[in-house]
Image (cartoon, rainbow, N blue to C red):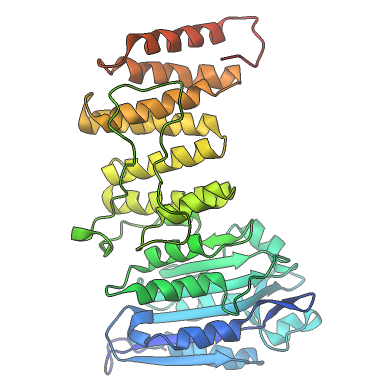
Length: 418
């Protein structure tokens, strides 16, 4: 039974440490260290609310029913609730997921680990928007195939879930505190204003140095299904998230040179709450998939906050385009640049320098396409946007049309020279 509306409204923070993850005598994830670090953060900061808040740390539990009792008590709180879980995710022979507890063995998972469905069951009765679940987990060899098949970590509707699940067998870092939890805490300490949870999550996931294949929650699909977030970005004056466009005001596109990167900045961690320098560092370090995933998450957040046709959303589309160029994915880069150019044409007209910069990016990436089908697929749209720019050097349009016509000619080999 839940007692919302009775007594004083209070918040609750429940921190749960499951079983440590050890591989070849090396600790990959130390849940106890994560809990100790989080316990040093004021509860009001963790929860994002100034209400009186109760904090419970559950470390070293061996009985699933003990954890269930704490979950049930936390779920009955009449105010906002944050549940943090760290440890090893495992599965039984039927493919049901569990949080392994201290002493959990593979042969007795059903009796020594916390069924994941219990978590969702206890939180299901809470009002939508009042509950946040934060996870920093490693899936073992039994859980990882189940998780990959599910595509996400199941949770009750109305509960916001943020976190990461790393695959088994990754190389452990040097710090006792895991990267995701450590960077979540560091972002909270940057102050003075507390970012929204979705921003904390994106910044922490981007800076954590996650192993390849790690599952980031919410997934892109889940994030796209969320309603617009009303919380403004405290990192920008006026509460606006506006990644700056790094292109110069060239009046005409140059098809023979690589356009300047949008991302800029000094490679390294997230700087002043801005994820772009870290994304750039990931890309220049060859971690293109991680960079692209983080940029996509920020783009989706901006789309739902400011609208899919907003300047902010277009700028993140341009960032994704340049990341695709850096990764050598020229078909994707071409399409993204063309879309950005068309959006800027609508919003800024034919004279805007950002319009010409986007056209330059599209034209350059299109010239790098070696597959005839790709040239023909995106060529007509590129020609259309170039024709819409009266200040464009007409020779560029003629050369583009000539290459498109030649690629359409029958009898040519699939690969085309440029």
